[in-house]
Length: 285
Ligand SMILES: Nc1ncnc2c1ncn2[C@@H]1O[C@H](COP(=O)(O)OP(=O)(O)OP(=O)(O)O)[C@@H](O)[C@H]1O
Ligand SMILES: [Mg+2]
Image (cartoon, rainbow, N blue to C red; front, side, top):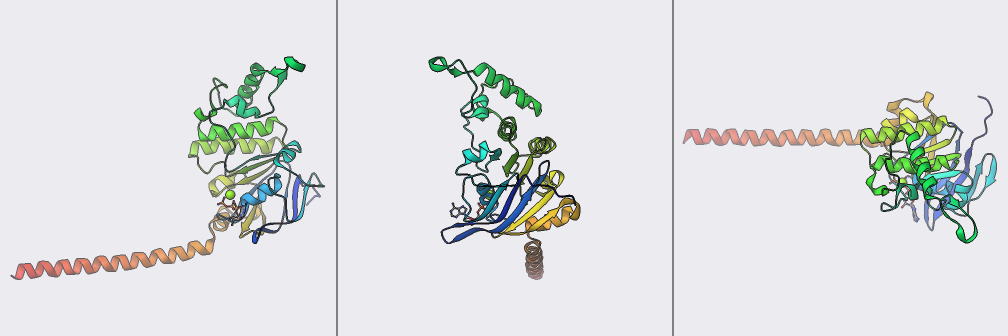
């Protein structure tokens, strides 16, 4: 393989919260124009990992590199300025505020200067409408509250914002988990577009049907540790599904369900038997 420089990289990163070890010795590389899917059960450390990449948490050990340079983000604002845009699991949006306000969120364009300086809402509305249209969402009135958009469209506002402000790395924590098939496909299409635009994308999902079509590689987390990174061409949908669900757990669930079914049908047979004898008894009287 040719030598490529990862856009963003973690080297031996650990994160402790008091005595809780949320991440332990994680190394991961994500390249421009690629989607890395982070897989793992609830509590595996996925959100902690991306929060460590985006300045919410400081790593306890290890280092982060952005474009090959060792770096540290004091806060999410620093990470954002460096080009790391994150759409958190608990989506940071204000439902009653307009689409435009949510799109710019503190970075509104201004006109005039000195005491005459004010936000240029006309321009802001136009940009918000235009950027949403680029991803196929027709917003009639960008001054309408963001709460009137569907869940998928709201995710798209957050992603469109990241791309518009020139992110190099786009991090998405379960953006499709609460969405129906159609809405999820809108978000997935946009992830594919961000990748085609050359962003390095980190995508967390529990859904193999969402992960497999857009991913270039998968990193599997379990109890804060990494079980490795797999390139898509080296793996199959079934293997990824097993990694996500924990194949062993599913097998034991299978056995448990079979046992339920067996005892259930025994109980039914018993009930049928006693019913039948009851009928015989009644007939004999
Ligand atoms: N601020 C914190 N303080 C203490 N423990 C924390 C903190 N944040 C996360 N943890 C712990 O770290 C572990 C990993 O949590 P994390 O939220 O990263 O999991 P996750 O893989 O994102 O799970 P899910 O799929 O449910 O979102 C959990 O045991 C959690 O309780
Ligand atoms: Mg999480």
